[in-house]
Image 1 (cartoon, rainbow, N blue to C red):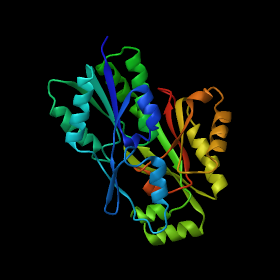
Image 2: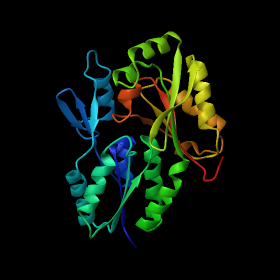
Image 3: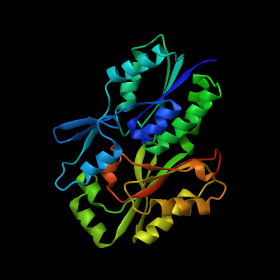
Image 4: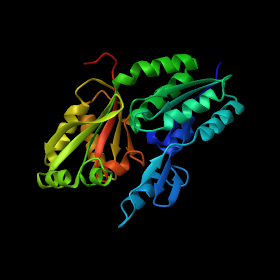
Length: 285
């Protein structure tokens, strides 16, 4: 029986306790608040990140990928612990340099079997792929088979998030102050998604209630295989989850987790947001 170790990065927003419990190795991104730097999920929990993020006059946070050396060290530790091969699943290369660090680390270990997967996504869209990889590894699939299966499912992964405010897109330099002001005046609630590793606007909706309804429509437009609810300290996230389950009654409620978005996406969308990461059934239109 081959032992396949599953790796990811902290941009996956997997709960640290869950990741440890099911054997996923998480290589953390660095989170910087001004001159202070933290390893996401190690020196700074996701809850602590949001405390800093929403503090008055807090510097706008930035993130940086772990170095190739850190990946190499983590991979070597897994092999030393008995792994025969590694499948390493990461945030879209178009959004972060993380996967490049992982690829360099792989090339530094040419005699080892290491498969690097670009999820072409972020947050729990990446995390859902990690869960699938763990299940396949537990079923004794080879690392090559797991990697092939994940790469075939990349196009079935999607993430949708409705924004509460445009203020954080402005802070991150994604839109101008004038655009943010106009959007706020018109009560525009953009719904963002990630397609082929690129952040796009799925829709723009007036008012919060209409935006939530449109979000639910987008989430449930295709048959769903796996789903995770996302939020950024949204007070009504449990109600939102309940509505999703009501509309998709064939989903096992125990499988639909609620995850707090962390430092990879959080600075650009701000608090109060809800959304979902979805793995749609293959071939479903």
